[in-house]
Amino acid sequence: MVYDLIIVGAGPAGMTAAVYAARKKLDFLILSTDIGGQASLSGDIENYTGYQFITGPELSIKFQEHVEHFGISIRMPEEARRIEKQGTLIRTITDAEEYSSRSVIVATGKKPRMLNVPGEKEYKNKGVTYCATCDGPLFRGKSVAVVGGGNSALDAVLQLMHIAKKVYVINNAGQLTGDPVMVEKITAASAVEVFNDTSVKAIGGGDFVKEIRIEKKGRQQVLPAEGIFVEIGLIPNSECAPLLKKNELGEIEVDCYNRTSSEGIFAAGDVTNVPEKQIIIACGEGSKACLSVFGYLSTHVF
Image 1 (spheres, one colour):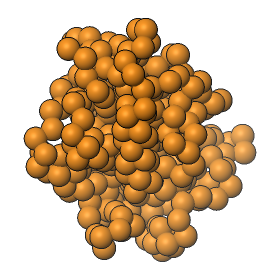
Image 2 (tube, one colour):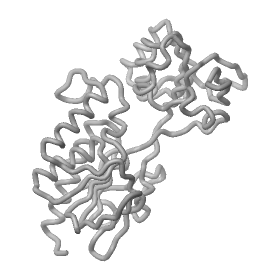
Image 3 (spheres, one colour):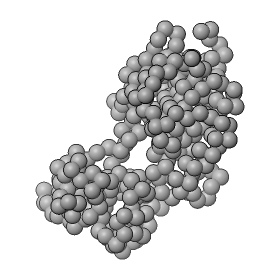
Image 4 (cartoon, helix red, strand yellow):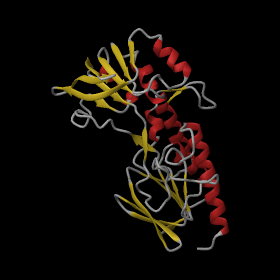
């Protein structure tokens, strides 16, 4: 079977593209490992138009309900391993099956960047985590460390400072770089201690994490922490599309129509080089990508 469109990813960009594809009556599938992507890991969201306040998991459920309203088919969990051209068609190879389509939208988002320090891999899921929304409640009344200084890290701190006994913020930059309103809330919190110009050297413990070793200006110290929340940025999930042109960060390069370097393949959301990784921007990019797909399918003979 040859589909009009395969959408790879079910985050904000992929789900919005799916709604537009359904309205355009395209014959398509969504392939994804999860629903919501990074949005489902977000805490409090106060800048998504139409909602004065909503959590990431709640917004992801709204996306899913919208898609289900159209009876859209989602193959999940199914991970795209390789996207390649096959004559005038495109073949998407997953860990379960192969699909042929006339067009593809890559909306695979990003994944957390790792610290790559001793102890990180050993203590993953034993105190080292990459999602405060998912795992924060497990550390109630304990001392924890959040590594990072941007919005993702500060979002984690804002969640944890109401749960944990103590929150250390380990930031390798000279100052916190998140939104000023978030910085103000954090610096005013008595349970939060910020270490700027500081790097993580190692994570230690027994069966579970007990401490984090940090270094500032050549001086090392050990902080007691039973939870380590790594929030130092994201890496684009673009490995499945080796034929596409990418920038130095590994992001898929797209033009204003979401076209990639390969005809018939479009991309949207955080996996692309579009500036500002925001949920609402990813949604807009997903809609643009699908409209571009519809124009492409309408003007090409296969």
